Length: 110
Image (cartoon, rainbow, N blue to C red; front, side, top):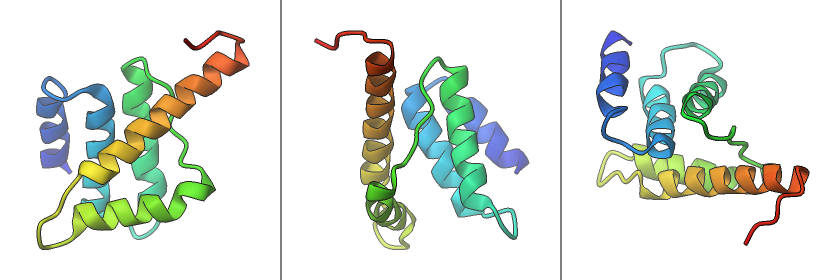
């Protein structure tokens, strides 16, 4: 976990905050440090990073659960892993969260 924290600190200067949050989420699931609650902890870590960087909390709606799991499997497969679909899904969920806040406060979205 020390190495993971050091890696995140290094990447925080290089990656976009949404990409960093998605990366942290995925890497914590790779490490799988707990017997139970790794997914919840990974989503909490992702949202902590997002909020600290001025972004909205990401909620993965139930309708996207299968897409979320498939994107995670693609990122974690042993041959030719790719974070692209997972990072894209998290970015799209962030955009939807921002739109929700705009609607809630009746802010017109151009």
